[in-house]
Length: 493
Image (tube, rainbow, N blue to C red; front, top):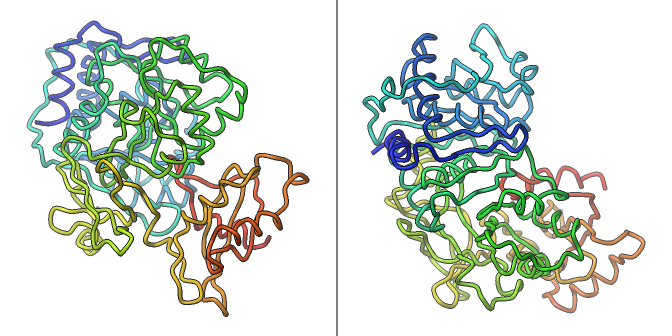
């Protein structure tokens, strides 16, 4: 089984159904159009001597043309290398060089960025327009399940390029897990407001291959998200925690929605303040679900909204539910509190890191992937996230989990977001610091009162030595806070 087989299966089942609606242009694409476009792209690749197995870098907008190019690269046996447009030119160059890609496709808005790359080493081409050709001209070819399908770079802004390798086999299993977890019905509409890089494109792909319809918005806008849900009669959508918080801040007095078609809003497992969860649970009539995964192991667990009917935001914070159908999670070497590293197993795991066997052996041990996340098993077999191994702060000879301190700070009025981290210190080894985003004006907030509150609710060695007030916290596409950037931006404060 390969990815192309899944597309052809969907074409046979849903041939004339609408697969994609581009909200910016109102352009629609059917499943038949998708297969026709794949046929066109297969011919295009051959004409430009881009053979199966070639690595193709992609710098595209979240529209139908860019998305179908992404899928066509994989479905025709080429290897996609999606690029993050928020990275610097030097970082993009490093990733292209590391991958060995010799072709780059770009959307019009990224033309200037693309043309700054070394043209003598890289063939830069605009994304081809959608085209319709006879379906009979397209077939999956000889694509094996273990053939490399994509190189997804992670941590590009914090060090040397590190690419996660996924195969057709792992992608098929990722998609299968998503479809089973979500219980998608043909015709269900999914609103996408997130950058389609890299795993977000797989989330919408799973919805598409189950017969669903994608509604593509160019970016998230808090002011029109709720109206889009109603306009397009959306069944599913996905938000990162930051987007959820901005949505609620934009509509602080909104009544509970009565959207008859809405079945679920997925949010990532990044820390979400309890008050944000409570407000979101009310607004969406408890139709929230929490997913957990990473580029190396997407969608490994899922907490369905049907399973959280009575839990408060405080009880939900940190919960990631149970493993999805073909995934296994366990806690490795738990301490006396039951906290240990979360390990993941399943056919959806990456094949390894591109050209980095040492790191692959370190992270993939037998059938298990070491996530670096700390967690514990709580009631009903759910798993709760406790923090990151690398984020443990060693202060005064004692270990401090940032999440425990963050939860305390988030319970104080006026705190919208917080990130707790360690900064090198001659006396303590590391001193505990907290970067805070306020939900009130600075004049109405007292750091001294917050510090006293922390001292009353935390052990003395866990109380931050320094509090920083910042406008925002730098985050990745998945809503995860970039700790290194927080430390850098607060260094001069």
